[in-house]
Length: 329
Image 1 (cartoon, one colour):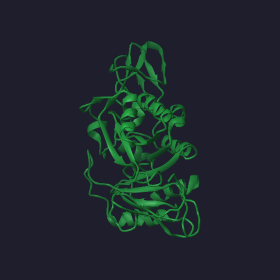
Image 2 (image 1 turned 90 degrees about the vertical axis):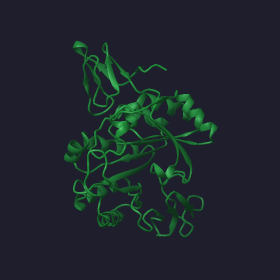
Image 3 (image 1 turned 30 degrees about the horizontal axis):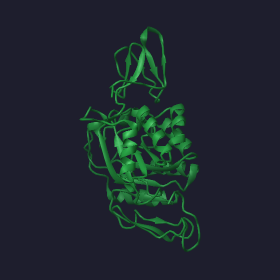
Image 4 (image 1 turned 180 degrees about the vertical axis):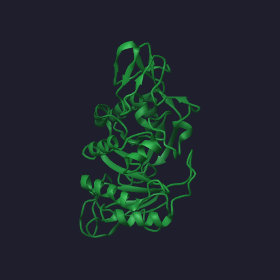
């Protein structure tokens, strides 16, 4: 498999410069240079993907680990990632593959799908590193997977332009978008990105696929409860049933602040519950905060402990009041 694969979504300009239209950076890339993501290169006035078919991580996870709590609970998912990223988060947990080129294995799209089929796995997740920057590989794999009856999951920072997103959506079934903060200064300083394009991605996906959101609460950087509440209110305006996963920060990569105070996590959880029907504390072990409740009568519908799941739904409905739960079960 060649290292160079023709990229989509770019324009050729004067003096051999190409303008990449994949993500909102819209990089203007000189000859023999790459964009911010490190993996899209201008070679003689044409843009190429450097990471097509190059897999840094391939594993089998429970779907709850993505995290997706309202999408085929307990099902196994074949998860894959490549390398490169269009953000540079100071707190990145996967910086070894997002900011460096790790050891890689080569898999053609049909080989990924065949692996899932042989292992009787019905879900494929594009994750670990940022899937936007291995767009062509993800798109081709997702197309083949859809044709074979498999479901595709996008786990992303949401920093993608609208046209590439819309081309991908017909082959997507679910997504978890990492909404890192509700503050443009945070996105610019800590992530090298921008908030508004991520909000647009969420608004589009909310009407097209099963959607869940993750928000990492970081000590002193985005843990202001009034600011966090604005995020909750905004998400509720789209659909208050969209599941929200609040994650606790731990030191990683360039950031060495103390782990997020558990009291702040609890307060954020209860504040979110005022605006949203389904809120979870993913990596803060606090009793009942990973469980799913009926948004009408309050009955516990799904009990979770680590990745062990007890599902009390009856035909996707609450056994007490008959209310149908948001998601695919």
